[in-house]
Image 1 (cartoon, protein in one colour):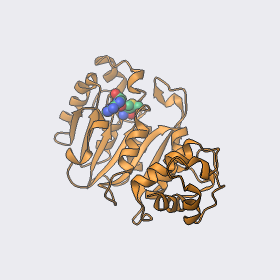
Image 2 (image 1 turned 30 degrees about the horizontal axis):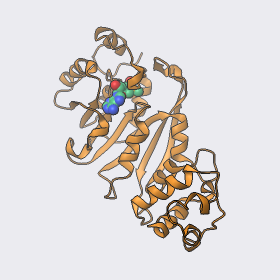
Image 3 (image 1 turned 180 degrees about the horizontal axis):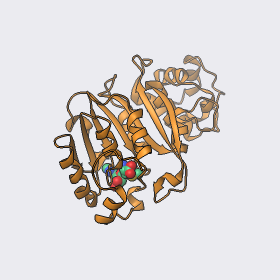
Length: 277
Ligand code: SAM
């Protein structure tokens, strides 16, 4: 098997530190060095950025990021049991890995990093979407991060890159594609993980658009939540709870009140956000 450093193989690390995977923490570990290295390489040049990794676990992807030349990795891990294994990596790559024991949902990455950052992670499935929404809905744009290279369940990946009129198109796709260029880079079979999850995973990449259409963020969140919350209904019905004169506002946005959410593209939702703000 490929060797990226002189640290013990990951299976040995897991055994030595009794890191039996816990479902409640979304623990499906990626032990194949070819795959962890492929994800690290996908994030591009890491020599001038801090990499923020959420959920390093036993440290497979962490090691790949450091071996790929990351200037600095800051890793947030909720499971205390993983800390000794991560400490070994930190000693090996002296000064280049900081590990923070915390729930990533409660942390503002700007408070624990300096300079430009790229976020790279094999995300825990139970909080992955919320973390992405947190990173996408920051007030200032362009955001504090240069790119996101993230592993999700494939179904979530498809929702992130979805086009209008597709089954996967929804709120997540509108918010992601309003502000970012999105792409699925490659899929990973359940067999790549220990233990194997039930579904295929996908690595998704997001780069901030330089100039997304100007839009009131809160209104976009509200309108997309209402419209896709009742996606089979016509907009005049699904948006009525937001404003009694929903029909007139939809027309003011240049759209048909009889249209359904999945027919409206990102520019249409931006127009709706203005009309309902
Ligand atoms: N990066 C490792 C890999 O690729 O093998 C582990 C990935 S595993 C899918 C998700 C990791 O996220 C686990 O180590 C888990 O303990 C951690 N985790 C779960 N919830 C978390 C949270 N809210 N904040 C930080 N880490 C979390």
